[in-house]
Image (cartoon, rainbow, N blue to C red; front, side, top):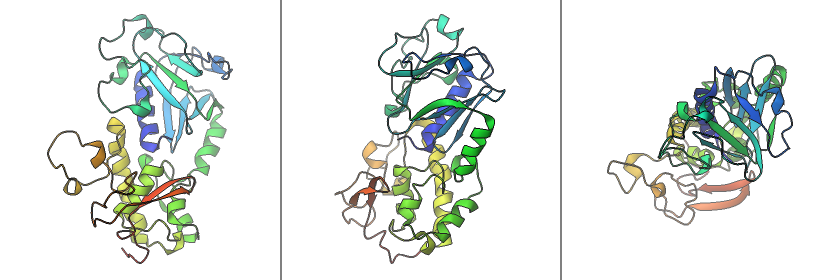
Length: 300
């Protein structure tokens, strides 16, 4: 499932590509039957909160998209490609699809989820996007969107006040590693950021929320914004400091150097050398942590 950095990045790309002009939309698969509500209307803006996208067409018409575990976008320049697979929704610029594809740059059927940040179209060159496999793709009213945002916790990428989330943590007996995954506590934080924020704060994932110090909560929140903002730039989540990477030269950071604990189970901790641990199904996802750096008796 994409985390908040990906959702905000797509919102920015789609707004740059389509906002301010009428767009065309259809649902070739037949499961999105409300495309005519938006087809031919001007897209005003694209909203992002947590893991939710809202395409605001004005007059109480918002297209809500939640990608869930399987959803993803593709994009490209030039003419629309042939319909393939379980294509839920297409959105395109009528003017742009009449233009030739950008030579060597079009990412036709290049999945955003496997995007490494290279060989991209500029957002303004994107002529069409396709959506497959979302949990939700439906019409929202302004009131329904507002109800959604009120249910969600503060989003680090929207410069929200974190106190609502802190208050829930302070009252909870649930483990902090579970609370970080609950979108009504903090919106947009997913499994990678969960593991990495906890490690960077040297916080055990198993400590009850009520027992986590304010200093640790504020450190994780202060970390979350810049890390997620950086993750918007090229769809890579890099959480390690340069001094903790074995390859310290310039250039692109190697994938194996990007994280402290996420998917590093069985490998030595970058700080203390202890074997990184993995627990399956913790808050529905695999949890990764260092049992020494994140021992429960550690105090910030």
